[in-house]
Length: 365
Image (tube, rainbow, N blue to C red; front, side):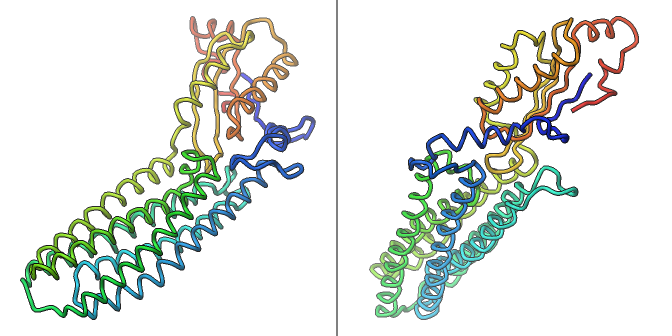
């Protein structure tokens, strides 16, 4: 069995990643713009991260201003819906800080302690952001709603509620502007493909939830002002809490799946397996494993049986060609490992005592 990594340490051949970057320099960019010179995949990712960072900073600035305005309006009016929205904006502001940390830390190069890089930092900080939405946003909103129901109806200042509605109207415009910016960045990064970025996905989810939450708070405040029944505002606060808990659950679930080692999407997995099965030198594909190492970074490990009769030089040439083919078919496959076994030796080992080639005792992926 011969273990052949994608990146040869002796530098005798160009690596799969280097060849892929050279090919990428000639391809159109994912945001629909023409390539600038010899822009590699790494450079394109850095440019994409800069766009995402601007989107996160816009959302952070909007949430900080809105949180202050909502808090002032909520304390002035005593509105539970407005206070719930203030808590929502505070949680979103903290989450944007987490996302900025994710963008910065996930791009650190691989080292001896983390040989596969730091791409999963992005997923970890996104998980913290989901926890922040759940605790600071959802739970506080539920608390405000139940407190309002327990307190019953009370005399409210009409002028105060007018101020509250104005604050929410301004917040709606600010949140809507931030959402448009986030959607624009998603489009620049390839639509649904852009939503694979947990930082960008979190901003879109937060801003979309904020727009809907502000709308619910405005409706609850208006109905309370007209009817004098606080149950409308309490219901709006509870609805905002339920919405935030649901969004936090979805974001947390996605971050968890990526953090613990999510496989490639089924289409990419099928493409790799079909490519391996189509190689004339491969007798059978014994195992194929993939794992996301970060945003647009995939590890591929395959155990294949080759047809009998190939010498070591031919095996190396075949392996190099197969790895390059995988990198062309699935550009995000950056680390590719092949565990190669001679099919004849594999069958022979099954009849008696298993040989090292059959059991993987030597040079496994």
